[in-house]
Length: 225
Image (tube, rainbow, N blue to C red; front, side, top):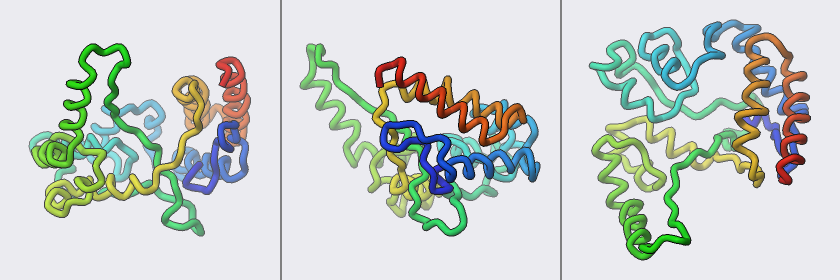
């Protein structure tokens, strides 16, 4: 939806029936049900199933967590895909600028409890753990990625882990999420079922968008925000 210039939220208010948002859903659905360029079983895929499809060469392109890159690039674990994959940002509709914000921001965070009896020590650990030096050392050793842009754009690191170039570029295209406390519930129990119904041919993109709209409104009203 974002990649088509639409937004399922107008501020904190549901906006799933926006024409551009529906157009984005229709295009996404069309890859599977009209053009039939996606595996018919893909609506049931989660992380492991998609990883396996890439490893076995059963799919040429996929939207997957960057954490899978180390497995896909390992000749022992993935002899078919290793050294043959490229990494890029999510696509966007023709006519829109390449800077269109369309990346869903997902992060791992550190926090300190207000009731902690060791707040100073906890803060010192957090500062050490997220420092440029430690972040670079961890990523250089193959331990995933980092939230530090300086690490994601370090030429010496990117040369060994090309996927990080895409991760670094995606940081600049994060789309803001609504300040809705029930957003996680909305993703899992409102959006996901309707999108799955669309992919499995039970609903059109227009109907799925309408049902997400009413479902989101009801959930937010019930939750108080």
